[in-house]
Length: 333
Image (cartoon, rainbow, N blue to C red):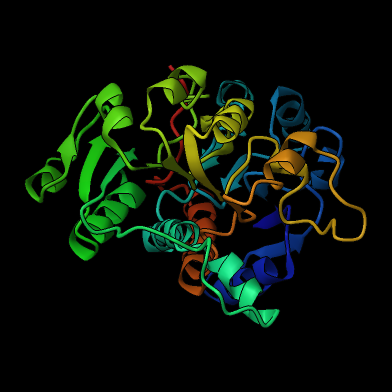
């Protein structure tokens, strides 16, 4: 099947071409994001492959459908960037990669915690300048600290294991569907208010839905423990960035680690080193010494990219053969 792969970088092309040796699809790679302005590029393709920074709203999907596209293959787990109701109206099938490597995101999450806590970037910069003093680099033992995990799916569960078993943290968790297996291993499920008030570190691993949009807002921040570390490697819209900036300024939030940003779609994965960024909110965040931001790279491991390419192309192959695809995103009811 002919597949138009959007938001494609050289590493995407490498891993997809390698995985495609087992499938034989016709792959065409476009560096452009797919949205209603660029949708004409997909004319004549029965399948499009998209990433979180592509925007498949009703207008884009209508044009895709009119040009013969039947399959939207997400090479990621989240699907908040696709209007599922519109896809259903236009008889389009949406598939995703529900699990690629939970370890990749979980390990990056813990890496952010360690880097912020022990001020590793500042320490490295200082030493490179010939300054070997350690004043201002004071951290804390992770052992014995309380970590609140919001969302205990595949990724959140791995984070719980790493922190609970590996670091000896007390792990609190909030999830509408508690994982009893992890509860038996010492994870304590609780309400959000208790998680906010007791956690030294809060890490977010929930999907972006109407219920989780701006879950971390001014009201939530008022409930957290003073000086809390906040980590988000899920979706940018889960936190209200302006409210978080106020929390950083007041000291209510002691440190912040982000791999996602609510307005990242036209920023992340691009190079602005020669021009600077025009997003004032992100620019303000980057002025804080206790903030670490990575460019949606938590998933970026060799194992994860291999799994993403294989699953994405396999999803399309299943649909092409008329088989049931377990990774199909259900239409909204």
